[in-house]
Image (tube, rainbow, N blue to C red; front, side, top):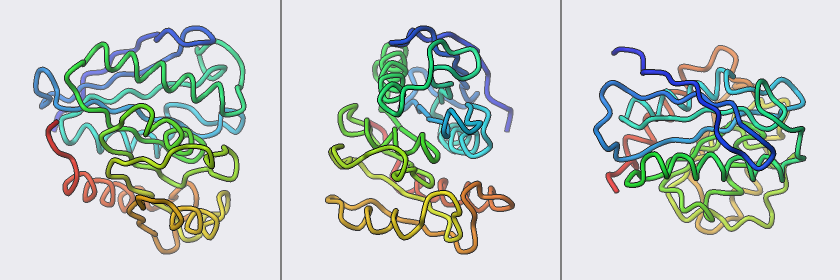
Length: 216
């Protein structure tokens, strides 16, 4: 499979331009049936659009023909602004979703994220009417998701059993109280950053997309 066509763009955000990378699979239809937006880990702890888990989520979307946008939150890389304590990053994500919808107005929205970014994706999924959501090790102990309406689309939480950053027990307790409930995939022995388990993570994502990704 050829690598996707890559475009580096600046997307207008509420705090200024947001650095973004758009990847378009060569196998994508025109117009595509879906487009993906993927959110990165905590801006203050090295999180960027180049994170390997974020890359893995984007590649999983692209394997199903969906163009994917990875972007840097405000204050990261070439993105303008400064850390927004989760609230600003939620606004950034909505701006990128708006860009994606203007570029591909007929495409369903697939949302993804890792850690801090996964919690941000959870916050916006229902309001943005996402068609599906993949939340990898969602950072619910850092970003408050209690006020967010639970996504009504198919959604998956992938959690490492040995997560040393986001307590697995806290994620499972939160997720099991939600209605409608998400699908949960617990990877035995996996750490927060899925060191040595990226292929396992990709397999879980691809399995979920195989079962749930439908044409709009």
